[in-house]
Amino acid sequence: MRARNAVAGRALINPVSADEEITDILLHGESVRIERIASHGQASAEDFWYDQSEHEWVLLLQGRAGLEIEGEGVRTMNRGDYLLLPAHRRHRVAWTDQDTVWLAVFFTQR
Image 1 (tube, rainbow, N blue to C red):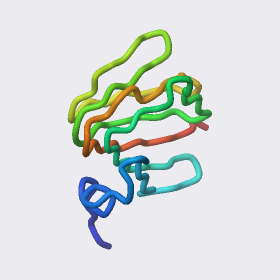
Image 2 (cartoon, helix red, strand yellow):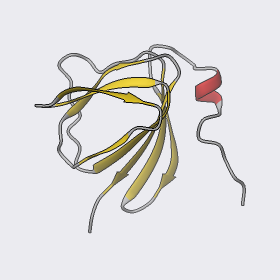
Image 3 (tube, one colour):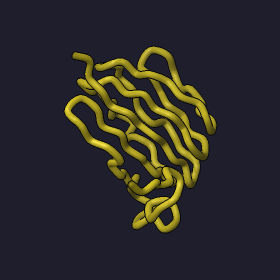
Image 4 (cartoon, rainbow, N blue to C red):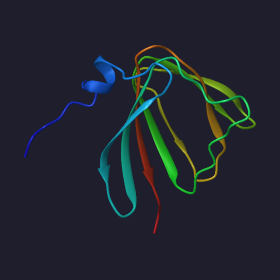
């Protein structure tokens, strides 16, 4: 078994394009998916909202970001901040710093 590092790798050191976030699936199972997302200044389109059927627990591993939750405004997230977004809780990425790294855990409850 090999240990891996969530804040190192191709997406973080040498992004393919600063126009798009880079997502690596670290684990995928029947009711859970863990993703590492590298952002390089991206934001959601002004009229776009995530509205997912899964719960999402998100942790900011590196950098800073603004996460807008519908009806609550923009929350500034700093390194180490995390929150739980229940299924169908509409949200969007308002802004990210360069070299922002997220850990997102998507899950369903049985």
